Amino acid sequence: MSAIKRIGILTSGGDCSGLNTVIRAVVFRAILEYKWEVFGIKNATDGLIARPMKYKKFSLSDFDFPFAKMGGTMLGTNNSGNANLQMTDGKLTELTNDEVISRFKEGIKTLGLDALVVIGGDGSMAIVSNFCRKADISMIGIPKTIDNDAPVTEYSVGFATAKDVVMEALDRLDTTATSHNRVMILEVMGRGAGHLALESAIAGFADVCLIPEIPYTYEGIVNKLKEVKESGRTHSLVVVAEGISTPEGGHCYAANGRTFCGVAHSISEMINEKASEFNVRTTILGHVQRGGEPSAEDRIMASAFGVHAVDCLAQGKTDQMVAFKEGKIESFDLSYVLQVANRPVDKDSYLVKTAEGLGIYLGELDA
Image 1 (cartoon, rainbow, N blue to C red):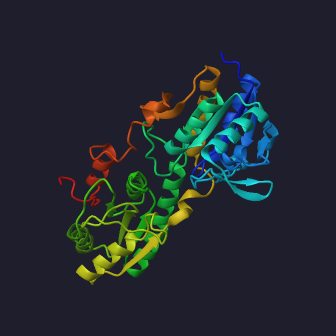
Image 2: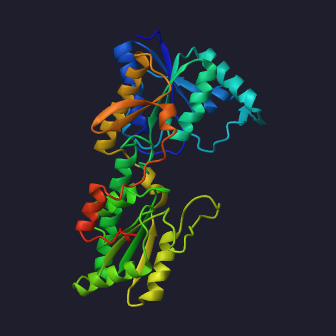
Image 3: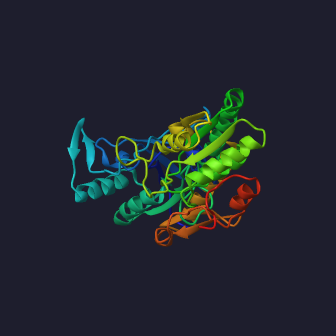
């Protein structure tokens, strides 16, 4: 057993549902089983680097109010990737990399932390793991992303809730599509992976689902819509993952030039151009997918991840990421996780075969 007595926990990167549930699980396991003290670090690593530091000591009573059932993160987060710009006594200061590391180490020492639990993506884990090694403390990571594409793990916190949100949106769009005889296109998040789009399309009874992993053609989309109309149904649902490329190989970006956004409008214009008989409308769901109370599945998995992370620390493990793989919750060396590419949709998976069996147009599977 380890000699840990006090641990910290932080959330890093984009928010999603289930983060507060992880925090609750870590606090409960650490206090109830190991009698450790737990400190919540605010705004990711910024809470340790800023002066004055920003943190709170947790107790079980902090969760009497239903924080754990709420979306977002009660600790705040930061996904700017720039730890060098920090507040010092109310003034924004640009620090050198050495100063950032020095402040981090000083913050760890001031709070007397023996270990840190990091809830974030693989990028956040890599950065904080490096900080922790230099501060000579243990670190365990917990994966979270609605994209569900984190390496190694088959499940990431936040995915299940986002999937439910998209499914509900499709159900609502379906009633409008039925009433007005329309083709409704829904653009969902996912970056370069199609997990959210694919599973939501199956659950929401879509007719077309376009994901980054499978090439498609405009003709394939139009042919499917015509097939639906010829069957006697006068409306269709199309799910589009934000990160798909056009058949010509381009992408659609938001005004910042970095974030995928707007490909649904491109698909709509194409349908209008090639098949003007269809009445097409588009919806970009956006950040609605990342908010709201976590689903039962997210609460269960987030709780299991949090408990396992604390147990890993108690066993003396460090530089590892908790993962759900082949029906088990395990931990893997972070060095291995970072060597593995982000997890795409497997074109041979049962989900792809299910969608294909339901008649959903996924693109050119044999291409």
